[in-house]
Length: 152
Image: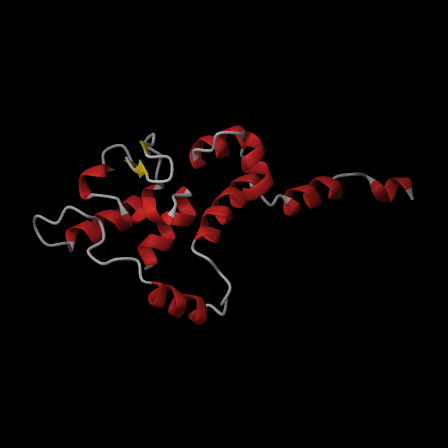
C-alpha cells in the first residue's frame, strides 16, 4: 500500500490508473510512467516521476517474479486501506484525497493552475481550481506580505 500512496501523492494518478500500471509502462531512463487513463479511456502523457519514487519503483520491480507484467500482484483492498486510515488516525480519508493533496501541494508551492491541470489531465482549469486546490496557506502568506504594521 505504501508504494500506491507514494504514487498517488507524487503524481496525482487515480487509484484505477495506479492499479493498471504494467512494468513496461515504467520508463526508468526518463523517470516517467505511461498510464492508461481509465476514466477517460485514453493513454495519458508520460507524467514525470520524482527520482526518489523511481528508486522505490525500481526496488519494488526487482522483487517481482520473472514474467510478471503488472506493477502490483495484489488488488487494492478496501480492508487494507481501512487499516492504513486507522493507523494514521484519519478514518475519513479517501484514496482520492491523495490526488487532491497532490494538487493542493503544487498550488501551495506556487505551481500554476495550467501546469497542475496538465498533470491531472483535467479538461479545464476551472475544474482544477474548484475541486482540487486548497491554496489557503498561499493566500495567507500573500496577505502576510502586506505592510499592515506600517499602516497602523
